[in-house]
Length: 317
Image (cartoon, rainbow, N blue to C red):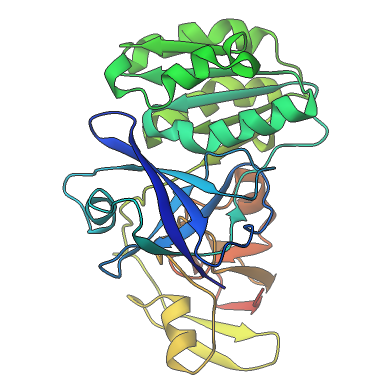
C-alpha cells in the first residue's frame, strides 16, 4: 500500500546528492519501520525507484531519503532532483533487506559513497539501543560525502564515526584492519556502496565473523548472462504449473497467467517479489537475498532468478 507524501524540505548534501524530507499529505504518522529499510518512491513523471531511509526509525513524523543524480539516469533520480518543497510523491510501505541483528556483541557499519543512507538509519537505531558500534565511511572527497557534517558533529555519532576520504580501493582494507581485529564470531558487519566495495568488505570480514554475519545492501542491478538459460517448470503450491522458457522470467510467466505477484524494481534489487521454494534448486541472480538465504535454497527472487532443476515448486509470500 502506498501513500501520498509531501516534500517538506529539500537539502543539497553534495553537488550530486540531495535529501528530501517527506511528510504524509493526510498528516498521519508513517508506518513504524526497522532500521535499514527502503521504500518505493514514485516520481512526478511516474518512474518508480527504491530509496533507503536515512532518518531515525523511531520518528514516524517524517521520512528522509537521499537521491544521487545518476548519469545516465533511468528517469527516477533526475526527476527527484527537480522536485521542490510542497510537491507530492507516492511512497510505499517500508521494507527491509538488511536489519540490525539482535544478538550481536558489536556492530560495524561500512559505507561507501551514497551507501551511507541505510547505514545512517542503523546508526540512529544502534545508538538508541545503547549498542556497541562503529561506522566507517569512505568517500572520494569531503565534497562528495553526504551527511558528513551531521556524522561528525552530532553527539551520538562523533566518537563512533571514522571518515576516510580519497583512498583507493586497494588502500581501504588497511583501514579496516583495526576494526576487523576487534570483531568476534558474534559480531555483525553491515555494508552498502558500490558492488566492488561491498565485495571487498565481505572479503575482509567474512572469514572472521562468518558470511552470514556480513549484511550487504545492494542498490544497483548487475548484468546477467542469459545465453545458457534452459526452460523449466514452475509450480505453485496450489498445483498450478507452467513452463518458463529461456528468455522469460518466472514473474512474467506467472503474471501472464493471471497470478498476482507483489513486485517493484523487477531487477533483483528490492526483494518485493521474493517467494518461498518448496522443491527444486534455484539459480540465484538477485542482489537482494543474503548469502545465507541463497545457500539455504528456500527463497527466490522471481523477477531475475531461475532454476537449475527441471521443476521448481514455490509458494508466494
